Image (cartoon, rainbow, N blue to C red):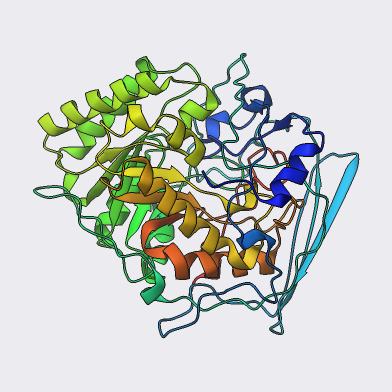
Amino acid sequence: MKSATAFGVLALAASVAAHEHQHAKFHQRGLETNNDNCKVTYSTVTSYGEWGLVPASSAPVPSSSSSSAAAKTSSTSTSSSTSTSTSTSTSTSSSTSTSTSTSTSTSTSTSSPPPPPPTTTTSTTAPPPTTSSSAANTDAVAYGYKAAVTTSEAPAAAAPASSAQNSPSTQSSSSGSSGSISANGDKWAFCYTPYTSSGDCKTADQVSSDIASLKGKGFTTIRTYANDCSGLANIGSACRANKMSMLVGIDINASGIGSYTDKQVADTITWGQSNWDIVSMVIVGNEDIFRGWVSASGLAGLITDVKTKFKAAGYTGPVTTTEPLNVIEQYGSTLCPVVDVIGANIHPFFDVTVLAPVAGVFVKSQLSDLAGVCNNQKEAYILETGWPSGGSSNGLAVPGTQNQVDAINNIMSNVGGKAAIFSYTNDMWKDPGQWGVEQHWGCASLFQ
């Protein structure tokens, strides 16, 4: 990791409290109600790079070159989220363009109730949430989190236009009967879960409509997390109809590697034997070392087992996993030998030094670090990245509607061709989390 800047040194001198991070594993609905699974104690404060410390008025912003903008700027927009609370944080950000936005959130450290019952009968009820009584604690600064610096306003900056020329090129990493990894200029993948805003399963028609809309916006690939809600069947059918590829997730839950994961593997093989041609990558787990649900050696063993079984079933594409970059760096010697490509979830909001307009510059730097973990011998991909539209500030990282536009534009122009954007829509069934942001990552509507 990069050396600490003066900002990081000053932050280290401050009292660093134990924070509760709830972004990990929020993508599968059955895990969102148990805050005790998400306790993280931070004992290290590190500042990555210089970009977050540069005022927006002078920060280097990638120049626009020709292709259509990644996100459209609203003339006036307001995003708000509310949960029971004793503290309120208000953040407002404005762009040098004519656009403005206000984001207000009220958050609490108490856990929110489970998703409310469905209001219609058109959706299939999802399986009950799985919970765990043990808390997973880690001392690693998993996302490059720092001691929070109180601020409520980000310096103004114009949103850069998306540029395919600035985006790292993608290469085909699979052959035979499996799908290939390919991007449409600076647009590659979108993270998608088949849940309604209340947390119930979407119908096949709803899923089909969602996937078709992402195809219309220029994306080529959909990332999934688990097999619930008939996800493989419904998402797979929609991807096939729209000539899109899939990054198929194999889920691990709080019980670790066992019967639940075995069923995920078996069900994916059954489905995949007639669908490998649309699968461009298999992702085993999602931040499970970070969560404390599996050891690095255990995950490596599972990846090896999945590769063997999937190859026997006809899959010839890459298999990998994903964790925060810090975890990948810590356990690279264990993971690099077993993965075909190296992936990480890189969320610039969780670094207190990162301003929204240069979020993509930060992510690009982290992508370079990710490739270096395996000595640049494995193709590197960002398997989650984005910016929240609502919630409370995390130092210089300020959520908000316009800040989300600025951040995603900068991400797309810097790394769009190698990044899975998180996420399709806001997820109001989630617990608000540490900064009240977990419900507000939806951004598909920003793309034209």
